[in-house]
Image (cartoon, rainbow, N blue to C red):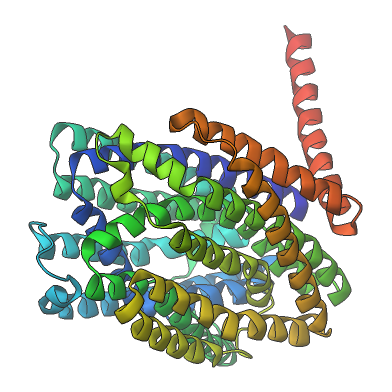
Length: 525
């Protein structure tokens, strides 16, 4: 059942990714054609400010989900009820704190925009972003119960439905009204409808939730939850400060237009990240269930296979981005009627963006296992060092090197702090094995990425016809070359064979069931 649900979750997330990628790309293309770079910068800037305010969430979601794995695995309805009641109360408090903190920031918005941004109604736009964030806390917590039962594909389908409606509505608004305020209103309305629909679906799937709205977990359980929340707050602090202060620093020291250009690169990275997170994230609930029912050797075996999958996906994506980023963005922006060269970064900047993407991606499987096994208490002080290193290096270097300095700050904090601490904690307390295995594995994987990626990049450079044909040919060449080399080099490894056996088995099983259903229908007719 774990394998089936994981497959369905991955399938739903992959489908959602394709729809999101296509629609967001179309919407962004029209957005660039209709509105200025500064509006792109506003999107990135206010999105990052609200991400910083989301620190008020304190990591409650991750801690609560971990504590729900056991009652879900044991089908303990009363235990689940108590957890969800506590979840609701905590998230209501978070919504209030985020609202107050967001309103306090209103008088200081001017400090985050260098010069005159040329955008009307900045305060109203910010308040709309704030409202959109608060809404997610009021109803969104119920999604955790569906995901915890390894049925995340249900909530993913709901999200995809309203996401499709949102993008279509926003495209119409841009074409008809050319108004950013109405454009943003569509996002808020669809976000509200998404969360309400998921909440209603959760209540129908688990009707026992309605029988008791007051009971809470025992004092000991609450103490354990709050202990883990305090640890997760540290981790959330690190994630937010590193991943969401870049736009604030760039906007303050470089300019809002640069944030807008940077946001195009991040949109493409974000789209791919959503797909990868959907695939790898679909395993989290299964890992959490596995960790409370199976032995550590089995958990470690699954980890090695998933880590290989994570490496394959992220290394291919990193190489593809390095090969295609600038040709794609230039072609794309040219099609909007603007000069694509004005929206490009030098190759050195692209390399730093890509290497930060790769380093962040290579941490995901380890972090998923750390969270699923509830080990975040052991490295709770890591984010403090991460934040200090990132901010100090970024601010010092941005003054002289601009955007490059900010990207170097992110890289230094990742390699100097996160990379090895997270692995050490997961191996020592989760797998009870030496972390030297991880470092050896990472070195081999990363060396392979640079070697195979260098070969792929060198051959793809020979394609230089310009426009859409160049982008498509480079994509095909990059995909065939890099993945072909990976399959040749790693085809005999245990991790590769197990991954392919599982994948083929699931596909054959799915196709087999479809063929049986088809035969029955034909027989009836």
